[in-house]
Image (cartoon, rainbow, N blue to C red; front, side, top):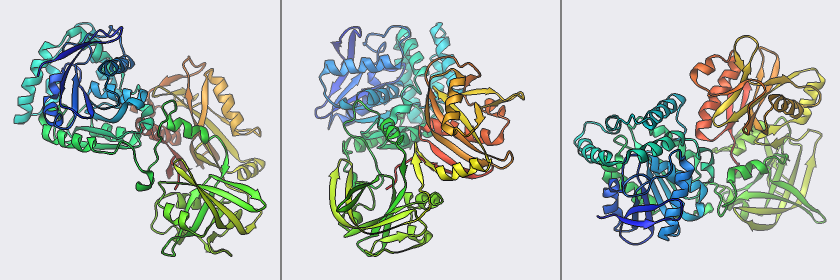
Length: 583
Protein backbone atom coordinates (compact mmCIF):
# COMPACT_ATOMS: atom_id res chain seq x y z
CA UNK A 1 0.00 0.00 0.00
CA UNK A 2 1.44 3.33 -1.08
CA UNK A 3 1.63 6.39 1.13
CA UNK A 4 -0.33 9.58 0.43
CA UNK A 5 0.89 13.06 1.34
CA UNK A 6 -1.12 16.05 2.52
CA UNK A 7 -0.10 19.61 3.35
CA UNK A 8 -0.89 20.58 6.94
CA UNK A 9 -1.38 24.02 8.45
CA UNK A 10 1.71 25.97 9.50
CA UNK A 11 4.12 25.10 10.99
CA UNK A 12 3.63 21.34 10.55
CA UNK A 13 4.60 20.87 6.90
CA UNK A 14 3.68 17.63 5.12
CA UNK A 15 1.78 14.61 6.45
CA UNK A 16 2.42 11.15 5.03
CA UNK A 17 -0.18 8.44 5.70
CA UNK A 18 -1.67 5.15 4.49
CA UNK A 19 -5.43 4.70 4.07
CA UNK A 20 -7.67 1.67 3.55
CA UNK A 21 -11.30 0.67 4.04
CA UNK A 22 -14.41 2.66 4.88
CA UNK A 23 -16.63 3.29 7.89
CA UNK A 24 -15.82 4.88 11.23
CA UNK A 25 -12.30 6.33 11.10
CA UNK A 26 -9.56 4.46 12.97
CA UNK A 27 -6.31 6.43 13.24
CA UNK A 28 -3.05 4.59 14.01
CA UNK A 29 0.17 6.23 15.24
CA UNK A 30 3.42 4.23 15.44
CA UNK A 31 6.34 4.56 17.86
CA UNK A 32 9.79 6.13 17.69
CA UNK A 33 11.93 4.82 14.83
CA UNK A 34 9.01 3.13 13.05
CA UNK A 35 6.69 4.19 10.24
CA UNK A 36 3.05 3.66 9.29
CA UNK A 37 3.92 0.37 7.55
CA UNK A 38 4.49 -1.14 11.03
CA UNK A 39 0.70 -1.32 11.36
CA UNK A 40 0.24 -3.58 8.30
CA UNK A 41 -1.44 -6.48 10.21
CA UNK A 42 -3.94 -4.05 11.73
CA UNK A 43 -4.52 -2.17 8.45
CA UNK A 44 -5.32 -5.44 6.68
CA UNK A 45 -7.67 -6.79 9.37
CA UNK A 46 -9.43 -3.67 10.62
CA UNK A 47 -9.97 -1.96 7.24
CA UNK A 48 -12.70 -4.56 6.62
CA UNK A 49 -14.92 -2.64 9.04
CA UNK A 50 -13.28 0.77 9.44
CA UNK A 51 -11.65 3.56 7.49
CA UNK A 52 -8.08 3.02 8.67
CA UNK A 53 -5.62 5.92 8.54
CA UNK A 54 -2.06 5.01 9.58
CA UNK A 55 -0.03 8.19 10.02
CA UNK A 56 3.74 8.63 9.76
CA UNK A 57 4.81 10.45 12.92
CA UNK A 58 6.75 13.74 12.50
CA UNK A 59 10.29 13.07 11.26
CA UNK A 60 9.37 9.50 10.25
CA UNK A 61 8.40 8.10 6.86
CA UNK A 62 7.39 11.00 4.64
CA UNK A 63 6.09 13.34 7.38
CA UNK A 64 7.94 16.60 8.06
CA UNK A 65 9.88 16.71 11.35
CA UNK A 66 9.02 18.99 14.24
CA UNK A 67 11.63 21.53 15.40
CA UNK A 68 14.40 20.19 17.60
CA UNK A 69 13.42 20.46 21.26
CA UNK A 70 9.73 19.75 20.64
CA UNK A 71 7.92 18.03 23.51
CA UNK A 72 4.88 15.79 23.74
CA UNK A 73 2.30 18.64 23.61
CA UNK A 74 3.81 19.67 20.25
CA UNK A 75 3.14 16.17 18.89
CA UNK A 76 -0.43 16.35 20.23
CA UNK A 77 -0.87 19.67 18.43
CA UNK A 78 0.51 18.05 15.25
CA UNK A 79 -2.08 15.27 15.48
CA UNK A 80 -4.86 17.82 15.85
CA UNK A 81 -3.63 19.60 12.72
CA UNK A 82 -3.44 16.26 10.87
CA UNK A 83 -6.99 15.20 11.73
CA UNK A 84 -8.28 18.67 10.88
CA UNK A 85 -6.63 18.48 7.44
CA UNK A 86 -7.99 14.96 6.92
CA UNK A 87 -11.48 16.10 7.88
CA UNK A 88 -12.15 12.96 9.93
CA UNK A 89 -14.42 14.32 12.62
CA UNK A 90 -14.39 12.21 15.83
CA UNK A 91 -12.08 9.19 15.47
CA UNK A 92 -11.07 5.96 17.09
CA UNK A 93 -7.40 6.49 17.99
CA UNK A 94 -4.74 3.85 18.63
CA UNK A 95 -1.09 4.57 19.36
CA UNK A 96 1.93 2.36 19.93
CA UNK A 97 4.73 3.35 22.34
CA UNK A 98 5.46 7.03 21.55
CA UNK A 99 2.23 6.95 19.55
CA UNK A 100 0.42 5.87 22.73
CA UNK A 101 1.76 8.95 24.54
CA UNK A 102 0.45 11.13 21.72
CA UNK A 103 -2.91 9.35 21.74
CA UNK A 104 -3.25 9.67 25.51
CA UNK A 105 -2.43 13.39 25.34
CA UNK A 106 -4.92 13.86 22.51
CA UNK A 107 -7.62 12.10 24.55
CA UNK A 108 -7.03 14.59 27.37
CA UNK A 109 -6.82 17.71 25.20
CA UNK A 110 -9.45 16.97 22.52
CA UNK A 111 -12.17 14.68 23.92
CA UNK A 112 -14.68 16.13 21.45
CA UNK A 113 -12.70 14.54 18.58
CA UNK A 114 -12.48 11.09 20.13
CA UNK A 115 -14.74 8.03 20.08
CA UNK A 116 -12.36 5.56 21.71
CA UNK A 117 -8.63 5.43 22.52
CA UNK A 118 -6.24 2.45 22.61
CA UNK A 119 -2.75 2.68 24.08
CA UNK A 120 -0.48 -0.17 22.94
CA UNK A 121 2.81 -0.72 24.81
CA UNK A 122 2.49 2.71 26.35
CA UNK A 123 4.59 4.16 29.16
CA UNK A 124 2.97 5.77 32.20
CA UNK A 125 4.73 7.40 35.15
CA UNK A 126 8.06 5.56 34.95
CA UNK A 127 9.86 4.67 38.15
CA UNK A 128 12.77 7.02 38.86
CA UNK A 129 15.54 4.60 37.72
CA UNK A 130 13.72 3.85 34.46
CA UNK A 131 13.13 7.55 33.83
CA UNK A 132 16.80 8.33 34.45
CA UNK A 133 17.88 5.60 32.01
CA UNK A 134 15.61 6.72 29.18
CA UNK A 135 16.48 10.41 29.67
CA UNK A 136 20.16 9.44 29.55
CA UNK A 137 19.58 7.62 26.25
CA UNK A 138 17.76 10.65 24.88
CA UNK A 139 20.72 12.88 25.77
CA UNK A 140 23.12 10.49 24.02
CA UNK A 141 20.92 10.45 20.91
CA UNK A 142 20.87 14.26 20.86
CA UNK A 143 24.67 14.21 20.57
CA UNK A 144 24.50 11.83 17.59
CA UNK A 145 25.28 8.61 19.52
CA UNK A 146 22.43 6.61 18.04
CA UNK A 147 22.37 2.87 18.71
CA UNK A 148 19.61 1.18 16.70
CA UNK A 149 20.58 -2.36 17.69
CA UNK A 150 19.84 -2.07 21.40
CA UNK A 151 16.11 -1.36 20.90
CA UNK A 152 15.82 -4.59 18.89
CA UNK A 153 17.20 -6.58 21.82
CA UNK A 154 14.66 -5.00 24.19
CA UNK A 155 11.70 -5.31 21.83
CA UNK A 156 11.93 -8.96 20.79
CA UNK A 157 12.30 -12.45 22.22
CA UNK A 158 13.62 -15.59 20.55
CA UNK A 159 10.42 -17.04 19.07
CA UNK A 160 10.02 -17.47 15.32
CA UNK A 161 7.34 -14.77 15.23
CA UNK A 162 9.67 -12.41 17.09
CA UNK A 163 12.58 -13.10 14.76
CA UNK A 164 10.45 -12.52 11.66
CA UNK A 165 9.10 -9.24 13.04
CA UNK A 166 12.58 -8.19 14.15
CA UNK A 167 13.81 -8.33 10.55
CA UNK A 168 10.95 -6.03 9.45
CA UNK A 169 11.58 -3.60 12.27
CA UNK A 170 15.33 -3.53 11.62
CA UNK A 171 14.56 -2.44 8.06
CA UNK A 172 12.35 0.43 9.20
CA UNK A 173 14.89 1.53 11.81
CA UNK A 174 17.59 1.64 9.14
CA UNK A 175 15.46 4.08 7.10
CA UNK A 176 14.60 6.51 9.91
CA UNK A 177 15.69 10.15 9.70
CA UNK A 178 18.15 10.46 12.59
CA UNK A 179 17.19 14.05 13.38
CA UNK A 180 13.48 13.19 13.53
CA UNK A 181 14.33 10.13 15.63
CA UNK A 182 16.34 12.19 18.11
CA UNK A 183 13.60 14.84 18.52
CA UNK A 184 10.88 12.24 18.98
CA UNK A 185 12.94 10.18 21.42
CA UNK A 186 13.55 13.24 23.59
CA UNK A 187 9.79 13.91 23.74
CA UNK A 188 9.21 10.21 24.46
CA UNK A 189 11.71 10.27 27.34
CA UNK A 190 10.15 13.35 28.94
CA UNK A 191 6.47 12.67 28.26
CA UNK A 192 5.51 9.69 30.45
CA UNK A 193 3.87 11.88 33.12
CA UNK A 194 2.86 14.92 31.05
CA UNK A 195 -0.81 13.95 30.83
CA UNK A 196 -0.90 11.11 33.38
CA UNK A 197 -2.59 13.18 36.07
CA UNK A 198 -5.50 14.01 33.75
CA UNK A 199 -6.51 10.51 32.66
CA UNK A 200 -9.50 10.76 35.00
CA UNK A 201 -11.07 13.11 32.45
CA UNK A 202 -10.98 10.58 29.58
CA UNK A 203 -14.64 9.61 29.37
CA UNK A 204 -14.50 7.38 26.27
CA UNK A 205 -13.53 3.66 26.29
CA UNK A 206 -9.77 3.30 26.88
CA UNK A 207 -7.85 0.10 26.13
CA UNK A 208 -4.33 -0.24 27.58
CA UNK A 209 -2.60 -3.23 25.98
CA UNK A 210 0.99 -4.41 26.31
CA UNK A 211 3.25 -7.46 26.29
CA UNK A 212 3.66 -9.59 29.40
CA UNK A 213 7.44 -9.38 29.08
CA UNK A 214 7.78 -5.79 27.88
CA UNK A 215 10.47 -4.41 30.25
CA UNK A 216 9.69 -0.74 29.61
CA UNK A 217 5.94 -0.59 28.87
CA UNK A 218 5.02 -2.95 31.65
CA UNK A 219 1.70 -4.65 32.45
CA UNK A 220 1.68 -2.61 35.67
CA UNK A 221 1.73 0.58 33.60
CA UNK A 222 -1.13 -0.69 31.44
CA UNK A 223 -3.13 -1.48 34.57
CA UNK A 224 -2.36 1.96 36.02
CA UNK A 225 -3.60 3.67 32.85
CA UNK A 226 -6.76 1.59 32.85
CA UNK A 227 -7.47 2.31 36.51
CA UNK A 228 -6.85 6.03 36.05
CA UNK A 229 -9.49 6.34 33.29
CA UNK A 230 -13.21 5.97 34.14
CA UNK A 231 -13.80 3.43 31.34
CA UNK A 232 -10.35 1.87 31.14
CA UNK A 233 -9.46 -1.79 30.63
CA UNK A 234 -6.04 -3.44 30.58
CA UNK A 235 -4.75 -6.44 28.60
CA UNK A 236 -1.34 -8.15 28.72
CA UNK A 237 -0.51 -10.50 25.82
CA UNK A 238 2.35 -12.94 25.33
CA UNK A 239 5.30 -10.98 23.95
CA UNK A 240 7.39 -7.88 24.41
CA UNK A 241 7.26 -4.42 22.91
CA UNK A 242 6.05 -5.05 19.35
CA UNK A 243 2.97 -7.17 20.09
CA UNK A 244 1.06 -5.62 17.19
CA UNK A 245 3.50 -7.58 14.98
CA UNK A 246 4.41 -10.62 17.11
CA UNK A 247 0.85 -11.27 18.40
CA UNK A 248 -1.04 -9.59 15.58
CA UNK A 249 -4.13 -11.82 15.65
CA UNK A 250 -4.65 -11.36 19.39
CA UNK A 251 -4.09 -7.58 19.11
CA UNK A 252 -6.57 -7.38 16.23
CA UNK A 253 -9.15 -9.32 18.25
CA UNK A 254 -8.82 -6.96 21.21
CA UNK A 255 -8.93 -3.88 18.97
CA UNK A 256 -12.08 -5.25 17.30
CA UNK A 257 -13.74 -5.71 20.69
CA UNK A 258 -12.66 -2.20 21.68
CA UNK A 259 -14.11 -0.77 18.46
CA UNK A 260 -17.43 -2.43 19.29
CA UNK A 261 -17.68 -0.88 22.75
CA UNK A 262 -20.40 1.73 23.17
CA UNK A 263 -19.01 5.24 23.01
CA UNK A 264 -21.38 6.37 25.73
CA UNK A 265 -22.54 4.37 28.70
CA UNK A 266 -25.99 4.00 30.23
CA UNK A 267 -25.15 4.62 33.91
CA UNK A 268 -28.08 2.46 35.05
CA UNK A 269 -26.33 -0.54 33.55
CA UNK A 270 -23.05 -0.32 35.43
CA UNK A 271 -23.00 -0.32 39.22
CA UNK A 272 -20.67 2.17 40.81
CA UNK A 273 -19.49 3.58 37.47
CA UNK A 274 -19.09 7.37 37.36
CA UNK A 275 -18.25 9.31 34.26
CA UNK A 276 -18.43 12.90 33.06
CA UNK A 277 -20.02 13.65 29.67
CA UNK A 278 -19.64 16.76 27.56
CA UNK A 279 -17.14 18.34 29.96
CA UNK A 280 -14.68 19.64 27.41
CA UNK A 281 -13.58 22.58 29.52
CA UNK A 282 -13.41 20.87 32.92
CA UNK A 283 -11.50 18.02 34.48
CA UNK A 284 -14.18 15.87 36.19
CA UNK A 285 -11.83 14.99 39.06
CA UNK A 286 -10.99 18.67 39.57
CA UNK A 287 -14.71 19.48 39.58
CA UNK A 288 -15.33 16.75 42.16
CA UNK A 289 -12.52 18.16 44.31
CA UNK A 290 -14.06 21.63 44.04
CA UNK A 291 -17.48 20.29 45.12
CA UNK A 292 -15.71 18.58 48.00
CA UNK A 293 -14.53 21.87 49.52
CA UNK A 294 -18.12 22.42 50.75
CA UNK A 295 -18.30 20.88 54.20
CA UNK A 296 -21.34 18.63 54.62
CA UNK A 297 -22.80 16.23 57.10
CA UNK A 298 -22.73 12.47 56.55
CA UNK A 299 -25.95 10.47 56.35
CA UNK A 300 -27.05 6.92 55.67
CA UNK A 301 -30.21 6.69 53.55
CA UNK A 302 -32.24 3.53 54.14
CA UNK A 303 -35.34 1.77 52.83
CA UNK A 304 -36.57 -1.74 52.09
CA UNK A 305 -35.87 -3.43 48.75
CA UNK A 306 -38.44 -5.13 46.56
CA UNK A 307 -37.78 -8.37 48.46
CA UNK A 308 -38.35 -6.69 51.83
CA UNK A 309 -34.69 -6.73 52.87
CA UNK A 310 -33.24 -3.48 54.24
CA UNK A 311 -30.93 -1.53 51.91
CA UNK A 312 -28.94 1.66 52.42
CA UNK A 313 -26.08 3.82 51.25
CA UNK A 314 -23.88 6.60 52.57
CA UNK A 315 -24.69 10.07 51.24
CA UNK A 316 -23.60 13.63 51.95
CA UNK A 317 -25.95 15.17 49.34
CA UNK A 318 -28.77 15.83 51.85
CA UNK A 319 -30.65 19.02 52.64
CA UNK A 320 -33.92 20.27 54.09
CA UNK A 321 -36.32 21.68 51.49
CA UNK A 322 -39.46 22.92 53.20
CA UNK A 323 -41.10 23.27 56.63
CA UNK A 324 -44.67 23.33 55.35
CA UNK A 325 -44.99 20.64 54.21
CA UNK A 326 -41.85 19.19 55.88
CA UNK A 327 -39.67 18.05 52.98
CA UNK A 328 -36.09 16.85 52.68
CA UNK A 329 -34.05 15.64 49.71
CA UNK A 330 -31.12 13.35 48.97
CA UNK A 331 -29.35 12.62 45.69
CA UNK A 332 -28.78 9.07 44.42
CA UNK A 333 -26.41 8.14 41.58
CA UNK A 334 -28.13 6.56 38.59
CA UNK A 335 -25.36 3.95 38.72
CA UNK A 336 -26.18 2.90 42.29
CA UNK A 337 -27.09 -0.70 43.00
CA UNK A 338 -29.86 0.80 45.17
CA UNK A 339 -31.41 2.77 42.29
CA UNK A 340 -34.44 0.50 41.67
CA UNK A 341 -35.12 -0.05 45.37
CA UNK A 342 -35.02 3.64 46.28
CA UNK A 343 -36.91 5.03 43.30
CA UNK A 344 -39.73 2.47 43.66
CA UNK A 345 -39.94 2.52 47.47
CA UNK A 346 -42.92 4.14 49.25
CA UNK A 347 -40.48 6.02 51.44
CA UNK A 348 -37.01 6.20 52.95
CA UNK A 349 -35.17 7.32 56.09
CA UNK A 350 -32.27 9.72 56.38
CA UNK A 351 -29.97 8.90 59.31
CA UNK A 352 -27.60 11.77 60.22
CA UNK A 353 -24.48 10.11 61.60
CA UNK A 354 -22.80 11.19 64.81
CA UNK A 355 -19.07 11.92 65.08
CA UNK A 356 -18.39 8.48 66.46
CA UNK A 357 -20.06 6.65 63.57
CA UNK A 358 -17.35 6.82 60.89
CA UNK A 359 -17.32 3.02 60.83
CA UNK A 360 -21.03 3.00 59.90
CA UNK A 361 -20.37 5.50 57.10
CA UNK A 362 -17.63 3.24 55.74
CA UNK A 363 -19.84 0.14 56.03
CA UNK A 364 -22.58 1.72 53.91
CA UNK A 365 -20.13 3.24 51.42
CA UNK A 366 -18.55 -0.10 50.48
CA UNK A 367 -19.94 -3.18 48.73
CA UNK A 368 -21.26 -5.68 51.28
CA UNK A 369 -23.59 -8.69 51.25
CA UNK A 370 -25.43 -7.49 54.37
CA UNK A 371 -24.55 -4.01 55.60
CA UNK A 372 -27.26 -4.13 58.28
CA UNK A 373 -25.71 -7.16 59.98
CA UNK A 374 -22.99 -4.85 61.30
CA UNK A 375 -25.20 -2.09 62.77
CA UNK A 376 -27.92 -1.66 65.39
CA UNK A 377 -31.20 -0.61 63.76
CA UNK A 378 -34.97 -0.80 64.13
CA UNK A 379 -38.08 -0.13 62.08
CA UNK A 380 -39.07 3.55 61.97
CA UNK A 381 -42.64 4.71 62.59
CA UNK A 382 -43.27 4.99 58.85
CA UNK A 383 -41.49 1.73 58.08
CA UNK A 384 -37.95 2.59 56.91
CA UNK A 385 -34.88 1.27 58.81
CA UNK A 386 -33.62 3.70 61.45
CA UNK A 387 -30.08 3.42 62.85
CA UNK A 388 -29.28 3.70 66.53
CA UNK A 389 -27.01 6.37 68.03
CA UNK A 390 -27.38 8.95 65.27
CA UNK A 391 -27.53 12.72 65.70
CA UNK A 392 -30.98 12.67 64.12
CA UNK A 393 -33.20 10.64 61.82
CA UNK A 394 -36.10 11.43 59.50
CA UNK A 395 -38.56 8.73 58.42
CA UNK A 396 -40.15 9.93 55.19
CA UNK A 397 -42.79 9.02 52.65
CA UNK A 398 -41.78 9.45 49.02
CA UNK A 399 -43.02 12.86 47.87
CA UNK A 400 -41.38 13.03 44.42
CA UNK A 401 -38.44 11.77 42.36
CA UNK A 402 -36.71 14.17 39.97
CA UNK A 403 -34.18 13.00 37.30
CA UNK A 404 -31.11 15.27 37.42
CA UNK A 405 -28.20 14.42 35.12
CA UNK A 406 -26.28 11.41 36.39
CA UNK A 407 -28.29 11.41 39.66
CA UNK A 408 -31.93 11.27 40.73
CA UNK A 409 -33.25 13.57 43.45
CA UNK A 410 -35.41 11.83 46.07
CA UNK A 411 -37.73 14.27 47.84
CA UNK A 412 -39.27 12.87 51.02
CA UNK A 413 -42.06 14.14 53.25
CA UNK A 414 -41.05 13.81 56.90
CA UNK A 415 -43.57 11.57 58.67
CA UNK A 416 -41.56 11.11 61.88
CA UNK A 417 -38.20 12.23 63.26
CA UNK A 418 -36.02 12.27 66.33
CA UNK A 419 -32.88 14.13 67.36
CA UNK A 420 -30.16 13.83 70.03
CA UNK A 421 -27.37 15.93 71.48
CA UNK A 422 -24.66 13.89 69.69
CA UNK A 423 -22.57 16.16 67.38
CA UNK A 424 -22.81 15.31 63.69
CA UNK A 425 -20.06 13.77 61.55
CA UNK A 426 -18.71 16.15 58.89
CA UNK A 427 -17.10 15.57 55.50
CA UNK A 428 -14.91 17.89 53.39
CA UNK A 429 -12.08 17.55 50.84
CA UNK A 430 -12.32 13.76 50.82
CA UNK A 431 -12.02 13.28 54.59
CA UNK A 432 -14.15 13.10 57.70
CA UNK A 433 -14.35 16.14 59.97
CA UNK A 434 -15.05 15.85 63.69
CA UNK A 435 -15.00 19.44 64.99
CA UNK A 436 -16.49 18.71 68.42
CA UNK A 437 -14.01 15.90 69.12
CA UNK A 438 -11.08 18.00 67.90
CA UNK A 439 -12.15 20.98 70.00
CA UNK A 440 -12.41 18.75 73.08
CA UNK A 441 -8.98 17.27 72.41
CA UNK A 442 -7.41 20.71 72.09
CA UNK A 443 -9.15 21.85 75.26
CA UNK A 444 -7.61 18.89 77.08
CA UNK A 445 -4.16 19.81 75.79
CA UNK A 446 -3.84 16.95 73.30
CA UNK A 447 -1.10 17.56 70.74
CA UNK A 448 -2.03 17.83 67.08
CA UNK A 449 0.67 18.04 64.39
CA UNK A 450 0.04 19.11 60.80
CA UNK A 451 2.41 18.37 57.90
CA UNK A 452 2.31 19.65 54.32
CA UNK A 453 2.86 17.00 51.64
CA UNK A 454 3.70 19.53 48.91
CA UNK A 455 3.91 17.85 45.49
CA UNK A 456 4.98 19.15 42.08
CA UNK A 457 5.64 17.17 38.90
CA UNK A 458 5.98 13.90 40.79
CA UNK A 459 8.40 15.30 43.40
CA UNK A 460 7.79 16.20 47.05
CA UNK A 461 9.12 19.10 49.14
CA UNK A 462 11.41 17.69 51.86
CA UNK A 463 13.25 19.68 54.53
CA UNK A 464 16.05 18.96 57.00
CA UNK A 465 14.71 17.29 60.16
CA UNK A 466 17.55 18.78 62.24
CA UNK A 467 19.19 15.40 62.81
CA UNK A 468 20.76 14.77 59.42
CA UNK A 469 17.63 13.28 57.92
CA UNK A 470 14.66 14.49 55.87
CA UNK A 471 11.05 15.19 56.73
CA UNK A 472 7.97 17.05 55.51
CA UNK A 473 7.35 20.64 56.61
CA UNK A 474 5.33 20.27 59.82
CA UNK A 475 4.27 22.13 62.95
CA UNK A 476 2.18 21.67 66.08
CA UNK A 477 -1.35 23.07 65.90
CA UNK A 478 -2.32 25.89 68.22
CA UNK A 479 -5.79 27.09 69.16
CA UNK A 480 -6.15 28.78 65.77
CA UNK A 481 -6.65 25.32 64.27
CA UNK A 482 -5.22 22.96 61.68
CA UNK A 483 -6.12 25.12 58.66
CA UNK A 484 -4.22 28.08 60.08
CA UNK A 485 -1.19 25.85 60.76
CA UNK A 486 -1.25 24.55 57.19
CA UNK A 487 -1.45 28.12 55.87
CA UNK A 488 1.63 29.02 57.93
CA UNK A 489 3.55 26.04 56.57
CA UNK A 490 2.75 26.99 52.97
CA UNK A 491 3.68 30.63 53.59
CA UNK A 492 6.96 29.59 55.24
CA UNK A 493 7.85 27.49 52.20
CA UNK A 494 7.67 30.58 49.95
CA UNK A 495 5.58 28.62 47.46
CA UNK A 496 2.19 29.18 45.94
CA UNK A 497 0.34 25.97 46.79
CA UNK A 498 -3.22 24.72 46.81
CA UNK A 499 -4.10 23.57 50.37
CA UNK A 500 -5.52 20.38 48.83
CA UNK A 501 -7.12 17.70 51.00
CA UNK A 502 -6.35 15.52 54.01
CA UNK A 503 -4.10 12.68 52.85
CA UNK A 504 -3.33 10.88 56.11
CA UNK A 505 -4.58 10.90 59.70
CA UNK A 506 -2.90 8.79 62.36
CA UNK A 507 -2.35 8.64 66.09
CA UNK A 508 1.37 8.63 66.85
CA UNK A 509 1.40 6.97 70.26
CA UNK A 510 5.20 7.01 70.40
CA UNK A 511 5.24 10.82 70.26
CA UNK A 512 1.83 11.25 71.92
CA UNK A 513 0.17 13.28 69.20
CA UNK A 514 -2.28 13.04 66.36
CA UNK A 515 -0.78 13.68 62.92
CA UNK A 516 -2.71 15.09 59.95
CA UNK A 517 -0.97 15.42 56.57
CA UNK A 518 -2.45 17.57 53.80
CA UNK A 519 -1.64 16.87 50.14
CA UNK A 520 -0.89 20.22 48.45
CA UNK A 521 -0.14 20.95 44.78
CA UNK A 522 2.57 23.59 44.30
CA UNK A 523 3.04 26.05 41.44
CA UNK A 524 6.42 26.79 39.88
CA UNK A 525 9.08 28.56 41.94
CA UNK A 526 11.94 27.77 44.30
CA UNK A 527 11.10 27.00 47.94
CA UNK A 528 12.63 29.10 50.73
CA UNK A 529 13.60 25.93 52.55
CA UNK A 530 14.22 22.36 51.49
CA UNK A 531 13.93 21.13 47.92
CA UNK A 532 11.64 19.09 45.70
CA UNK A 533 12.85 15.49 45.59
CA UNK A 534 11.72 12.31 43.85
CA UNK A 535 10.65 9.63 46.35
CA UNK A 536 13.28 7.08 45.39
CA UNK A 537 14.21 4.22 47.74
CA UNK A 538 17.40 6.02 48.74
CA UNK A 539 15.49 9.22 49.54
CA UNK A 540 12.94 7.32 51.62
CA UNK A 541 15.76 5.79 53.64
CA UNK A 542 16.63 9.33 54.77
CA UNK A 543 13.17 9.78 56.33
CA UNK A 544 13.93 9.02 59.97
CA UNK A 545 10.32 9.06 61.20
CA UNK A 546 9.00 5.54 60.36
CA UNK A 547 5.36 6.63 60.26
CA UNK A 548 6.14 9.42 57.81
CA UNK A 549 8.33 7.11 55.72
CA UNK A 550 5.48 4.58 55.41
CA UNK A 551 3.09 7.37 54.45
CA UNK A 552 5.46 8.64 51.74
CA UNK A 553 6.01 5.11 50.42
CA UNK A 554 2.24 4.85 49.99
CA UNK A 555 2.13 8.25 48.31
CA UNK A 556 4.89 7.23 45.87
CA UNK A 557 2.80 4.21 44.82
CA UNK A 558 -0.51 6.08 44.64
CA UNK A 559 0.91 9.01 42.68
CA UNK A 560 1.79 6.59 39.87
CA UNK A 561 -1.88 5.57 39.73
CA UNK A 562 -3.40 9.03 40.03
CA UNK A 563 -5.80 7.65 42.68
CA UNK A 564 -5.45 8.59 46.32
CA UNK A 565 -6.84 7.34 49.60
CA UNK A 566 -6.98 8.69 53.15
CA UNK A 567 -5.13 6.66 55.81
CA UNK A 568 -6.70 6.26 59.24
CA UNK A 569 -4.92 4.44 62.03
CA UNK A 570 -1.83 4.80 64.15
CA UNK A 571 1.89 4.92 63.46
CA UNK A 572 1.96 1.10 63.17
CA UNK A 573 -1.20 -0.02 61.38
CA UNK A 574 -4.45 1.25 59.93
CA UNK A 575 -6.47 1.25 56.75
CA UNK A 576 -6.66 3.33 53.60
CA UNK A 577 -10.03 4.60 52.48
CA UNK A 578 -10.02 5.44 48.78
CA UNK A 579 -11.51 8.78 47.81
CA UNK A 580 -14.54 7.62 45.86
CA UNK A 581 -18.19 8.57 45.79
CA UNK A 582 -20.54 6.32 47.71
CA UNK A 583 -23.69 4.76 46.28
